[in-house]
Length: 346
Image 1 (cartoon, rainbow, N blue to C red):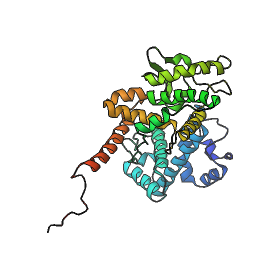
Image 2 (image 1 turned 120 degrees about the horizontal axis):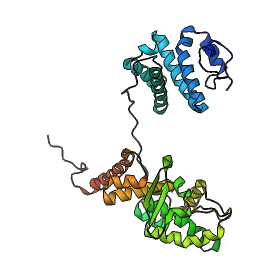
Image 3 (image 1 turned 120 degrees about the vertical axis):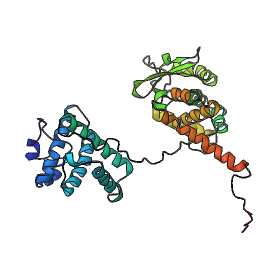
Image 4 (image 1 turned 60 degrees about the vertical axis):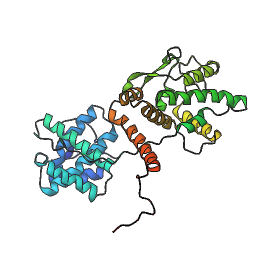
């Protein structure tokens, strides 16, 4: 992106930033020619310069400016300033972005986030007293339910016959250990490949997992997963190079396995087992959560094992179970649905 030429826009900032990565030369020219818009955007440039000094990414700065520029254009059309924008005006602007500009909900959410943070800065700088975004929320689209495989399908995957060729048999011992662990402990694939030898306790049947935000949790390890890991370890010790601490090792490279390799190996294993359903590592985590929740009903325990910071994320699996329950209800209960030959009594 080309940077803006020297102009009054730059003179309105309090930073010595040499260029505005969020502003193209063409847009800078347009703003320079519009005194009202230029005045509205002056504090926006000051704020973004502050964020730039704090090493916010160029992508973030560009996105923030785009959202605030749109609101500035709206305010200019209404002959309003930042301090005269209230919840009603904000709602009108957001509605326009959704209905007239046909912006996706996620994009409008991003713009609203930029507006919220900008007003927070204005208040800190004593340039505004009220943040119109306070308490304002967009209605989110329903979150899609995760795909779930039943226990029989997972048994078909995990208990398949060992391959005939020695090379493929060795790889399967490693792959089975990975897939058993994903399903046994509900790990994310990134958490799986990040495991070190020291993270696995085969005696006490537990695994130490480092999840999002570098948070560590202890998760139970199933017997079948522990047995699969024990069968794999002699091969791992032969493959490892340069004293790599990783639990799961690439046979060819002798170093830590990548997430992409785990994804590919799972597809290979599914095909070999004759499974038509699309299999991917996160599906095994979904299955762990759903099967644990349906078996125990303990939402808090499942939340802890999954490493969810917010229980609402875990609650989606209660909807998965309810969806299955309604299917059973519809098939079994005589009054669940209308019979095809209902008599019309008038």
